[in-house]
Image (cartoon, rainbow, N blue to C red; front, side, top):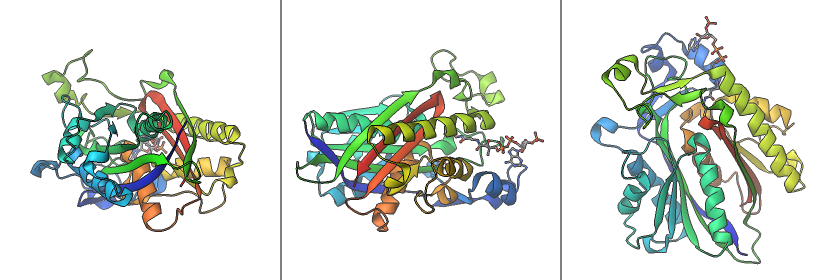
Length: 331
Ligand code: COA
């Protein structure tokens, strides 16, 4: 059995910033309402009109992660790409990403559909491939163009989401190193499938003109219900993983929850009785960019020196499904 560790991180946000003020010109809302109910001030929007795609953003994040890890294209043995907004339905975005990164070794690549839990699922899968000795260097990516699946006339959802990309290189750790993935838990509560969904466009209901007119091809959400699923499952997973690791909440140095709403993060921090300042928060700047929120937050907190080698970090996610997952690692 081998150990895995994060050897490099990277992230990318598109150039265009959308403020709450901008949104108040599109839908009936106000900066104050958005800030008070969500904590979000700005979000970033990909320039899809000029060809900026999900895999373009992911490639930039991955290159930064590979530079930090000191690995080259030929060293990457697998790409796990968590996303619910691939460039196209076929082929999968990880194949595009492999090509854009100049990886020519025909390594394994797949997209992972676990919505906002995609990165945490991906990291857990990658960890297991490294533990068994199958691979030594895996790219785990979370990247989204949620602006392409948001109904820009629905004030209950369009205020929340944004675009962006984050990635890590998970590599094999030496036996005597302290850096390692300590544990993980994944789950899904399928009773929640109807609360956060895109109704049409799948194989059970191919897109029709009527659907487009009714905007059934965009995200639909029951916000309050999702809020309750989020808090219950994220607290549950964090506690489960802490129990498994024989740790108390404040033994963890940094807590990186999925960035959906500051009120969800504050509720969880309160229930876990986390000391002030333990949560890495980016939702104010970037909104919710689904599978990308956690790897972007990891990258920021490592690059600005908050997360130091030897410190422990808890990742905790939930997403449509309702998928859930948490990962504990020592950086
Ligand atoms: N601006 C102004 N008013 C708004 C609004 C907006 N952008 N969005 C909703 N409202 C209104 C509603 O219409 C409602 O009005 P009513 O009382 O007259 O019917 C009122 O505000 C309260 O709506 P409600 O949905 O109960 O508000 P909330 O406090 O639950 O906040 C969310 C809404 C979406 C911010 C919140 O439920 C949330 O964040 N849920 C979790 C969603 C999530 O995390 N999704 C991603 C999962 S990965």
